Length: 292
Length: 186
Image (cartoon, rainbow over all chains, first blue to last red; front, side, top):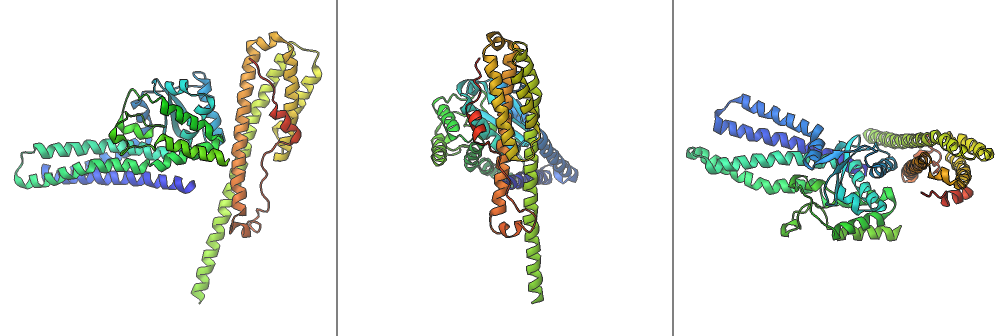
């Protein structure tokens, strides 16, 4: 478990480092061949990228919450939910995360933040209605496990950085296509454009590796370790499967944060899915129940 | 030859330092977890007088019950060992049971908003106490495992960690009291 946390911290740092390197490299190239060798532009880019990374690190959680329309609640707004989170946090020996509610009929939940002291769990109104207490507890324990394992830090940073990278890739691709410069530059931009085109799937893969399916299984397992009741989470997952309304505000960039996949079902979903299939998760939980 | 000896010695010292440090940090975590339980117990401790007073308002003559609750309450707060804690907890739960049995006879009391709020608060606090005990037991489990696995088991005694830590457990009688807790009817 602890080596897992260390690996998550390493991964985050690595992602941020590569991001700064990548963005400043890109700006260096653009600067050199397009604008014309001015070093200040390059330094500006380097500093800008670094600042963006830091902003992401400290307020990415707020961005993710706002993007999904989550509202913070206090204990008196929803004592049932708040107390459950509080008690699970005590069982995990961690500070109580902030609690958010998303006004959405779809049943889902996610956790975000940069470490256990600066973290938040958000649940939809749909999941509060759909689940009974043991099921909701299972779901929340799963989310708290993500917080405890520092999965939230990786996914938050991955989310914010990929947004920018895909934007940059897009810009370059367009510049290549609509560029009217002479042949020299065209050749270069063709390369850059191709690189950008190649980049998109790599970005997808980056999220994949950061938020691997293995991690969902792990959060299921450590969540159950907290509640000591695999059946709760298993039946929550089964309920989700039979009641899969998609989230109103669909947003690909935050999909990997959620408890269950919030996006519409489709052919490509299996290939690029951020979550393991629910049947598989339930099967593993039932196995745990048998052994206990 | 001397180089080999030095290398072995360095590895040994580093290994020992690692073992010692991990035992110390787990031990410290257990101490912290124990104090977390006390925090939650304090919450319940502060809650009980209100509950007793609420019942007292309706059943003044049952002073024996109130005295028992107050006495048992005092013992729960600062137990020295998990064993003592388990015993104090059992005694306390028994007196609480008799307190609620008294309350049972007064429908007006049971219907009062104040009493119901206190009961809800108590239920939540009991959940939190339980949660913090579970965390403590988890940490103790980690500590005991660490102490017993090879090669830590060879050195743990020498390094000053001679005994396993105790889990929080309820004894037989208290277990019965907790297993069959007060009916909280609304």
